[in-house]
Every structure is written in structure tokens, then in C-alpha cells.
Image 1 (cartoon, rainbow, N blue to C red):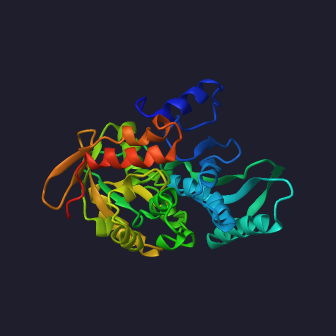
Image 2: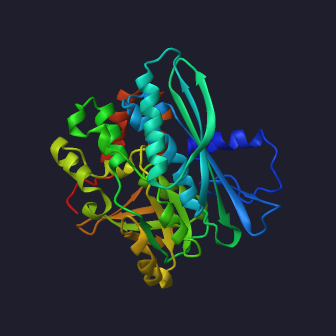
Length: 352
């Protein structure tokens, strides 16, 4: 865990705070914080908070609607990953004083439409005037204590799934950071949705779960570090990656693996189930917006092993990529160059 800069930073913050006796999860263990409720035995309060600011400053989002949409979905996705039923969302919105009213209206519509699409309400919040836009969503929900899902618990032989194809977040990120015109990957195409229905159905079935907001391979890397077991993944990009993203890769000559390795993901769930529960999963997944995709298997060895079409097996080390923005000093030009250099060393560009 200490090989990842973000984990070390989180641990430094954790040391500054006393721990509540009501908290049921340890640091890094779940996408949302889980709190025992004395007045509601058998239920845990799930609470999570996410800020959208870096993405706006870096230019990934220019449409206020996207800013609002992601603000709501980011925290709701964390509730999905622990199997919680949302109670609602509160929002802190910080925008420049005297800004165009259309900015506030667009952000508000994005937040409301995202929440409405999932049957959730904004309960209130806070507004501030700041030099730069910073938007924070805090989602709260309830989950049965004996069915809560965390990032720990997977076992060797478990099947690894995604709730849907991925790559849209990294396609948008690489298009913007690479200075491509909007038509190469329109921002309006990036409308990820929290998989709340899937999260509820995974209670009592998933052995571990985490959302893909930091990218698929970073998510799997974190699960590997927490559980001490790795993953074997056959690399059929057409199954793993969204069709619009593969079209973007073809049009721009971008390697498909980059769509899973970058740090700007979406809100699918990566989860594991025991092999004996796969048939049961196929029955309940009929209620999900997308069909789950079986992408691999949990292996004993703590490594992410990609199996290419040629049969070649490649163990990939995600630590340098996960730490790259820090080592690049926030310089996105350097980041993109070194991202490609690190990934090309994996030699994943062959057809699979």
C-alpha cells in the first residue's frame, strides 16, 4: 500500500484524527465510510464525499452541466460500491463571485439531472464565492450491516466482473490533455452513471467491490494491494472497452490499453464473486442497466496479469503510473509523455 503516493497521503491525514468507535470500516477498506447506528440496529450509515476541482482546472470539463453531473455521480457511485440505498445528497458549490448566471444554472441542472436519473434528491448544501470553481458532493445512505460490501474479502478462484465496458473517462481525459478538438471525443458523451441497482443486487454476493472512478487498472491494483491476491485478465479489448472509445482509439491511433490505465475513470463497479455464485449473479443482473462483463479471475500471486491474444502473459506494475502525476510535478505535457513511455514498456499493442 505504501508504494502508492495517494495511499501514503491518506494515511497521513488519518493519523491526525481520532477514530470513532461507531466506525465499522478501516482506512482504504470501503468506497464509503460505514457507521453503526445505535438507533437502527442492523443498519449501517454509509457516507462519502467527493470534490470536482482538479478536473475543471486541468480543462477536462468545460461544460458546467458535466461539472454538475459528475459532482453528484461521484459520491453516489461510492454508495453503490458498498451496496447502500441512498438517502440523498448535499452539495457545496464554490464559484467565482459575479460569474455568469448560466454557469450556476448549468451546474445545477447537471446535479439535478444526475440525481433524478437515479431517483435521488439534493437535500441542501452550501454556496461560496471563490477564485476557482470547486464542487463537492456528499452522499448518505443505509445498508444492512450483514450485507455490506467492502474492498476486502476476495478469494483465489473468484470471478472478476465489471458492471459495464469502460474507458470513457480516459478517452475524454486524453483528448483534452492532448489538445484534440472536441469532436474527437465530445464532452457530452461522458455521462457516467452510478450503478446503484447493481450495488444493491451484489449484497451477499460480491466478495469485494470498488468503483472505477480512478480507472480500471488502478482500481484492480488497489484491490490487489488490500487483499494480497492478484488478477488474471484475458485482454479482449472489444469486451472491456466501450465501443465509442475503441472508435476514438482507431481514429487517433491511441493504444487501447491506455483507456484502462489512465487515472480518469467512470463509475462502473469492479467486483468479485465466488465461482459457485456466478449463475445466481446472472439471474439478478437482468435488472441492471448493463450486463455484467466477466473479465478475469482472482489468482494467488499479487500481480495484475494480462493475457494477450497471442497467449503472451504480461504482469504490469501500476505503481509508477498511479504516482506519475506527482512525479511529473503536475506538468500535464510531461505526464502524457511519460505515461505513454511507461505503458509502451508493457508491449500491449499487439492485436488481442
